[in-house]
Length: 201
Ligand code: AMP
Image (cartoon, rainbow, N blue to C red; front, side, top):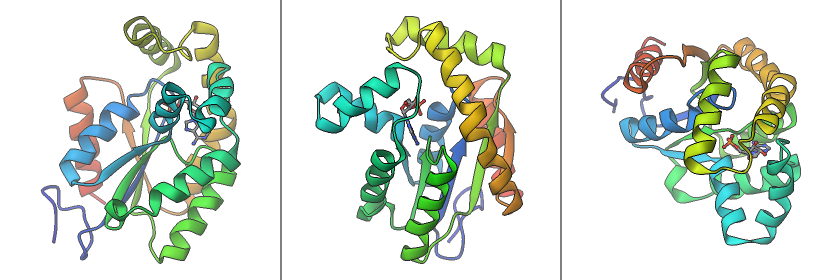
């Protein structure tokens, strides 16, 4: 079985990651790709925000890191993803948005997929320049009132991304999985670029 973009394997499954700096449009694109390919989009940021909103013990712990622009510790994040990837709706595919973000999370994900006898099909790397993402994030802060979107916290999040997450691109490039896509431009245009790049693999 193949989807409309001819991307899925012979079992119709598709396992993707989307990586990029804050403000590159990962969440927006993840929602569209999820609809296009009929796979669940899993955003660790959304799951943390939901827990913060509901005041769960995980939310209380996560909030202090999120508000400081730092990553939530790997142990908490890995547990959450392990549980989520054990749900039946992701047996045939998923798109992880915002995970893994550290080398330790890459190892953890390798372990989870290894035990399940599955593997990633591709890693979408969404690029965007710093001035543009700061501009977008400040706009979003004004619209949504996210507490991790003050200019100081935005700069911190970009530094943390460069330090801790950018190195993951190299790891996945060595594995031959990376599809790099320019995240600048109209939303539809960027979605089209991603679908075309995945189909060309
Ligand atoms: P996002 O919406 O993906 O930008 O995530 C918002 C915030 O949630 C991040 O700045 C982190 O504090 C936290 N977070 C989300 N995903 C992860 C992750 N994989 N590892 C650690 N922290 C995360």
